[in-house]
Length: 158
Image (tube, rainbow, N blue to C red):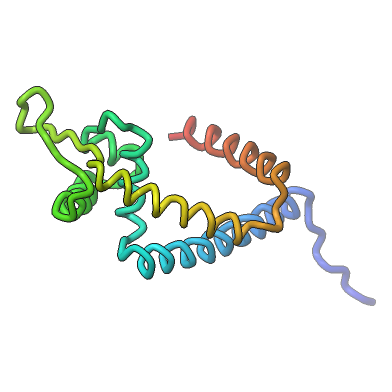
């Protein structure tokens, strides 16, 4: 008598499919991230975290509080402080106190920072476009919408 393999419920099959999806998303993310990290380092001598801070500031031309940058990037205030310190020393951002309050730092891109970020973001977008060239605009929109709905689900759990 031949033993039949243990039956798998539909739930197990769905769970395995989701696990495979997660692994594919992780591989894709790591591959793209490595390419972007290399591009930014080689071409601009900038790290991804520095680029991310500059991108957040680019989206808020009037500037942001340090705590807003931390929240936006989902990192600690301490991490942002070190990155901002280096960006200040490079002349890419300026830091000031909000309403004279020494406890709150307000940060914004300088003209030099805006110009540097424009160049970096164009190279970044070009690399992403080449890496994902096999994905149509329609597929990209569908995947983005699906991932956005996941984020909404997750955010409600925390």
